[in-house]
Structures are given as C-alpha cells and as structure tokens.
Length: 94
Image (cartoon, rainbow, N blue to C red):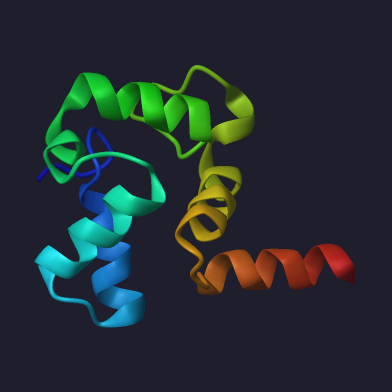
C-alpha cells in the first residue's frame, strides 16, 4: 500500500495512534471513508476521495488542503489525535 497516493499514510496513522494491526487499520480506514478495503490501494479512487475530503495529495488541487490543514482533516476523519495538529490548534487559541 502506497503513502499519500493511496491510503498507506492513513492506515499507518491508525497503526501508530491506536496500535492496530494492519488488517484492522485498513478495515477502520475503509469504514471511515465509506470504501471497500480494496479501494484503499486504487490511486484513482483515493485521489478523488482525498480531494473531496481534503486529506492532502501528492499534487494538491486546493492550497487549503496542504500541510497542517490536511493533517487536521485526517485527524477529524479518522477520529484521532495528531500531536502537531493539537499544538497548532493550541497556538491558534492563544
């Protein structure tokens, strides 16, 4: 499974933050994105999903979905805490 071209990074987030095994992480990500597990490795499907959900991509169509903005969307969609996002939001609150 690739990285940001498909869903590899999203699966990795689940493995790192929730200590899920790979099959469990794939199932969780697929469920959160309303996809089949096999769709997670399809670059065309994932490019569309990443664009629609604002999850970042190799060549982003929308500047607003780059960097920390994409990470914030990933944290929200997967219902996880990402340290850099938490620090950024704390900084915004003052």
